Length: 347
Ligand SMILES: C=CC1=C(C)c2cc3[nH]c(cc4nc(cc5[nH]c(cc1n2)c(C)c5CCC(=O)O)C(CCC(=O)O)=C4C)c(C)c3C=C
Ligand SMILES: [Fe+2]
Ligand SMILES: [Fe+2]
Image (cartoon, rainbow, N blue to C red; front, side, top):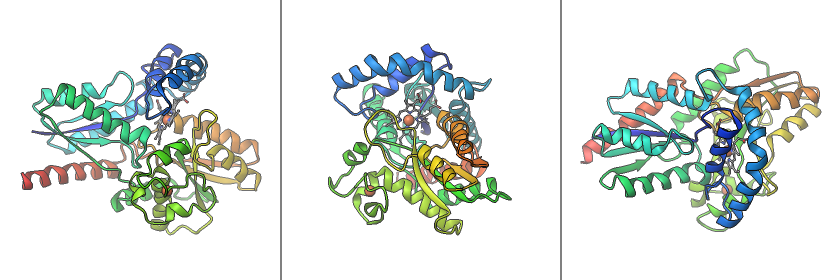
């Protein structure tokens, strides 16, 4: 019997420092998130980061926490229930980190008799720290606990024309009647090193080409795993779909952590620069996230707005993530349906 497992990042159980510490400990000890040798990661995470960051992050989580819980979890649950309403297959939800584990999601499906799972990482673009870590853990769980279960991964859907249409329509709907001057596409950043590590050609991707980014425009098999290329493609394809004029939209990367170079331009510095250059009305969309979360509700909608106002900007519009947008629910349900049918035909 077939079933579906949706997987998102996860959140702490509460915005209290002890729960944030537990969650960050698991998240940052993942070798695909902080990709240094175990001894160095342990020293960095347990010796430094976990002694300072949880307090600071807990304050940020408190600002965005809902009565029902973490926005990321609540919004992922709404997406799951929207899809479940349209599907005859069981649809479970698991998180890569935190207490709503992927293992529980697998168990829920297996308890219902599922032995053939479509795994849907809730990330439009591939990254080692997101898609890859989910796919690897899913396979480890399968081997150890459910060796008879078959798993099929839904590939990153960043350039799927229907996804681009759904995202573009959502942006257009939220910007209706808004005379914004610039639309910034802000994606979660990754260290430049992650891009080099994921380059299957070992030489194509130039993560520090910050101006023209020739490699991202030059066709290459490396792009199947190049987060930077896939982010830039989303911006380009949405711009094309919405007939946007060149110069009125651009890409930046947010949420950098530590001292290594991350993908640039950085979102906070871009907001500041634009405000200083006289942009008064700025809109921001965050297509690396399917569900609104700390990084969109606090870092962009609160901190980003504050930076913009400090340098003279006036109107700052944050476009929500797709969350449980009905067209997005329809699209994911359609892909699930296609998978179930294709498998039935070839079986
Ligand atoms: C330190 C390295 C990090 C990498 C690499 C990274 C990649 C990455 N993350 C997301 C999505 C989310 N990240 C979120 C929070 C978050 N991310 C990091 C670090 C890295 N992320 C930290 C330390 C945190 C915690 C928050 C903080 O302390 O500031 C979230 C929000 C979670 C929530 O509960 O709301 C998301 C979502 C992507 C897509 C990505 C690579 C492409
Ligand atoms: Fe992150
Ligand atoms: Fe590239």
